[in-house]
Length: 80
Length: 484
Image (cartoon, rainbow over all chains, first blue to last red; front, side, top):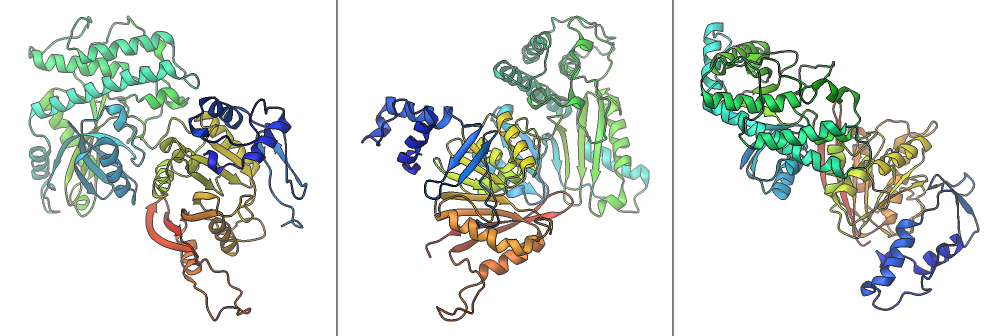
């Protein structure tokens, strides 16, 4: 699963939520065997959930609201 | 080794055959239209976990067709039925003993589940204890419980058999008012406990732990018969039920009870075979204990997920997930994959959210509100797309499904990575359109700007299967994304 993540985006998101804790800024080599690291990833991926908030596109700045844990990523007519 | 048979929806038989072989190491697997017969020594709990099956039965008898013509007299018909279907006492008694044993095992595994389930279970503590007691008792052949019944038979073996049956049967009595002729009433599967279904709720207070048993002379039973093919013109289901019912009463001393029997005997007569069995669960296996609001039939959803060949670590997307049935069936089967459901409708997403929470899959199944025509996912980022597309012609109020299909397919193709699979369920009409769209290759030379039609050159067709969805049929199509 970890190779499929964009690590820097994950860290940034965790940071913005105030839940980064001690998540490293870069993937350590041999992370698959690092129990400690895996636990930190598990926490951030599976135990932290945004219920109300928003996602922001880093390129356009367009915000997508999150409501009841479900992000709304519908584009308006003019955005499609 | 116990021999079972399961009913299966049309088109689901091959999925079920594969499933029993894979999960239950089944032997002597035999497929007939709408049914799969097999033998297995797997625990009953695992047999009840089958996902492609409708109902599960313990096999009583399977034989060549009951030969009859329209000219046979009623007396001769009755005689033929009796001789072909009744057989000898020992066969029946041994089958019923097996059935009792399996019920006991089901009860035992049910209690294990009850103990660990933290929600959705409505069961009184006293009741559970009593059930586990029953479970233990029924496996031993003890007769410590005092029964007050008028003993007319001195045949010890028969008494013991009946006692076991009665103990199970009493445990399984219900205050059920709704009785359809096809309902199996004599069993209690673990699913009933976990589901808060009113019509199945068992009123434990009525039974009471020390209530004296009514004087029961026989096991009460009911025959549920179906006749198909040209045979149905020679003999009616009701006639068969009457003859067999009377014959069984005479043979075993059992009592027919149409309203509230302890045991139900299923008889199926066709032009190719005759099949007798005892249902092992009250509700079809297709009724899942872990799904709250159903959308697509769970068996079909599971079959679609199995076609997608989901591997551990896979990312699977359903771009029109509705209440999430496909995602949940897939997530339950493939425990190391991640799932994303996309839908445009708030109501559906809300129900999907509840379903996911109810099935305790929140860590692996996520939801997104978006349009299937504009998926907020990077290209080539998904390992499998599984989707039940709306059958209706109306996609939204203004546009119809046929017009949107190319866009939806385009998005599915885009997000899939090379080697990824796409499994979609469509109505027969939309399937024609799908075939047309996906078989179009580049027409005309490259750079021909007049060629506006969208092509899906990287999707390669693997298989198409027809399945029954009840009143209508659907077609499941599987495609693989190849390098361009």
